[in-house]
Image (cartoon, rainbow, N blue to C red; front, side, top):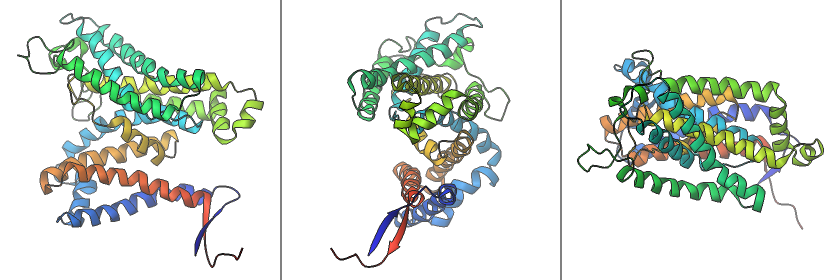
Length: 360
């Protein structure tokens, strides 16, 4: 019989090894899945992980790496602060959408004005939109003790309907001949998020992601807020005795994560995506949850995990084009990362015992 025995304290060795093991087991399980789909598993793994970095067209893919990683890192940093404190914001996808809608709407309201302050105003609008949308589950939790997981998740579908409505209504391009979608920001230089260094993929969203990593590291390592977040997550009762205000902490964590997700949406819509459209959201808010846990809720770990997950996006698109793999298989492959990471976490907190069950 196999049983799990709780460890007196979590294993540090397993905690560090689990992300690497999760990646390795995901490759193996993914290879089996690709083989079941009639594809060469070794070739599929090579296309996903090797070719974008060292392959023939690596120079192109490397530029896309930062483009894909930036929103994941920015959102995951915000989520990680709440997760560390036991505050579960699962609705970052909705905050990402609303931030994009509000920020883009502010910019398009000034079309075709050419003024330097338009883009900073859009960034502020994106952060504000995400912040206000995140405050809904935050306020409901502190005021009525509702489950923030359910509320934040359900609000994603409300945000998606708002996005569809805006794409075919208020923000629809008047010169678009009836097609859904806003004006393209490439035609509006004052509101466009350009590539700062040609060929690198570096834009203002990438800069914001790196700043967020540094900010989160300083807060968690050097600031009293970081101590309160860690203490609340590890020992809630001790946190209350230490004078931590749970209401303020809940609202603060929701606010920060919502603002960062909203900024990520604005940077994406004004740059790589180029416009508000019905299918603008691509799941970054949900994938960022995987990134946060794969990075062990640590800012540096999230930075590395974001780059790894971006690699699976880029490699997955290449595998779809070159090998004919379905998009659902790539999404399942990405989901395996979180599944095996959480499964591996069991070994961090429990040890396995083999033997017969004790008689009653």
